[in-house]
Amino acid sequence: MLEVGGIGGLILLVLDIWAIVSIIGSGASTGSKVLWVLLVVLLPLIGFIIWLLAGPKSSAAKI
Picture (cartoon, rainbow, N blue to C red):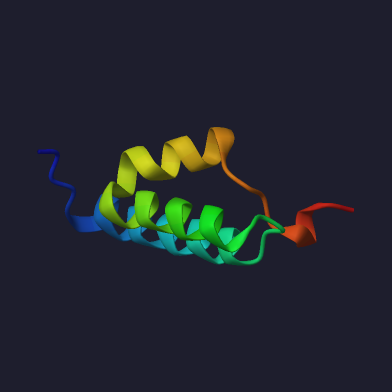
């Protein structure tokens, strides 16, 4: 398993929190939000990358 520590771990934590806040603020269905949050929480690095490429975006980003 990939272990992330130090400044890299802190950056990953901040990015994951940002992803979770964006997921919760998105217009996706509740079930979809739960699955995305679980993916980001259970697989922090891989989940963040997958969310960044394919996940629901925050409704604030839709102008």
